[in-house]
Amino acid sequence: MIKPEPYIIRPLMEADLDAMAKIETSAHSHPWSLANLADCFGRLYHGIGLFVTQESMPETLVGFALVQQIVDEASLLDICISPERQGLGLGRQLMAQLIQDAISREAVVIMLEVRESNFGAIQLYQSLGFIEVSRRKNYYQTPIGNEDAILMDLALV
Image (cartoon, rainbow, N blue to C red; front, side, top):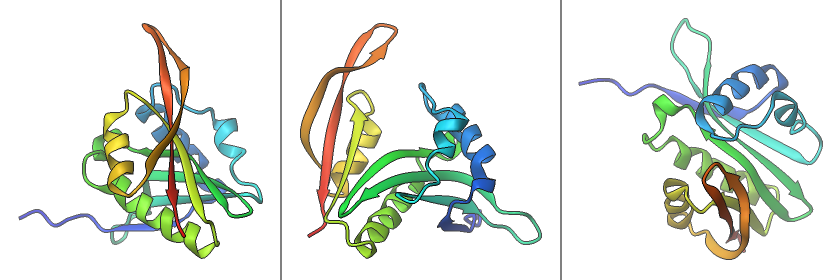
């Protein structure tokens, strides 16, 4: 039997930026730039990373989530898991921690937007209690046309 890898979730640091950009580029069809990722290390932002930890080896970032919180409203800006580790429940682990962090920061809602074609993410969000509250019609441009952005909220109180 294969022993599962040990994971930890901890706050991101600017030293994690290069690893974040590598994951972002490999996992998203429209990745954020390094500069966009770097902009998420300000006062209103919170980032968490999911790291593999093995004895006598440095931590390896395999996923991350970025949140902006203004007063009591948290917005999920980006969540990303390395393609080779997708489908293992790691996105769910990150989302569970993100929700707990938002509650501890006294947020009353977490908001996000997702491409209407991202069925896996939509299923994950719905399973965690997020509901569709609106759509931005033809928001995302694609090579074959436009697609809607689905806006979803999770009420925390």
